[in-house]
Image 1 (tube, helix red, strand yellow):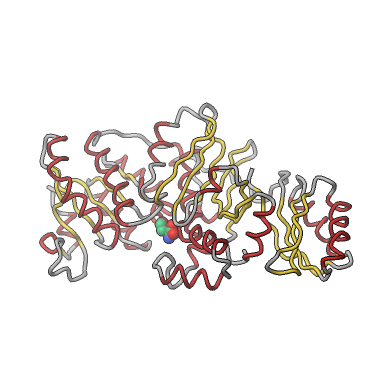
Image 2: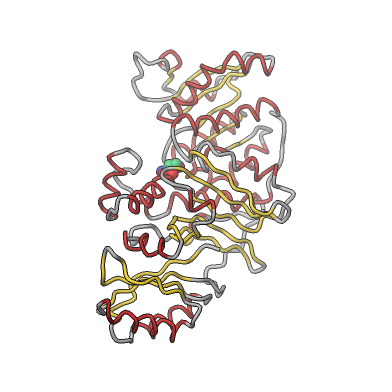
Length: 418
Ligand code: HSE
């Protein structure tokens, strides 16, 4: 008998329960033992729901029940969810969670504790919702030296960036729309400022580069300063704007950030729209592999949790201690890598004088700079894409341009994804 308990019966937890109801017979047959949902720990009143018969309100009802072999932690937030994960592992139960805050903050301690207690701690659903990414990186791609990850890891901001361009909307209006549709929370900070994606790229990078990456070391630039004109001007140059959670493993250490970037429209990442997520993994043998799908949602995320449950049913005794448990990655905070940058400026020129702006840009940034012209939506806003330069060089060149006639200010810059 393999009894399962769910801790936290919200959107994802109830999805796990629904799939377990659906698949109980199939799983029991496949694993030659009765596999079933046994208890749900929650303080909500669930009368009249299919979950009510399973409801318990005391943690001891789960942790002291020897028939429960696996605990699914779908509680949101950090402290309580983390406490429950620690308690379940200490009680000798496998733990599966979708809670990225817990994994990003305590993943190495929980992994070690699981190892010491001969149980497993799995968290496929914590990154990319229903997209398989953690197990492929841990197993299928693990012969590779993974040297780069580029992810669209936050559905809310991808919905907002897509909608801002499609419907010519301001940040405030698309945020209200995302909140009305239930994608963005009342306090949208975690999504729009990049902190949600930062946790996810830190988790993936720890696995990929064999060294723990602290999410607090991820440089975060959210999408609050992106305006409709940026999409219009980027499109003129053949680019889409995406919030890219990316990391690169270099000889000097790991560069990691969440920031809006221009992505060439010929690349598959540029075509990932609305709430969908995608993760590009660059490996020494595979080259580029792209994982795409629903990055959130009740059943998609619950599906990833079921994948972990099935993995544990198949191999309850499989033990491995990933390298990130004992190694910490070196994080490079300031980089002098040469990259291309999109530069948006405020101009006081009118259209007839725009040739002068173009030649000032060429004189200062060189003839490889790509002039994108003025935005149709705002004829005081112009943009160009620089040639390869470091961030420090960009600043010097922008300061020079800001001195030219007709340039009121350098308003915004974004990297171009390579
Ligand atoms: N707020 C997250 C997103 C939910 O928008 O992607 C899934 O982690």
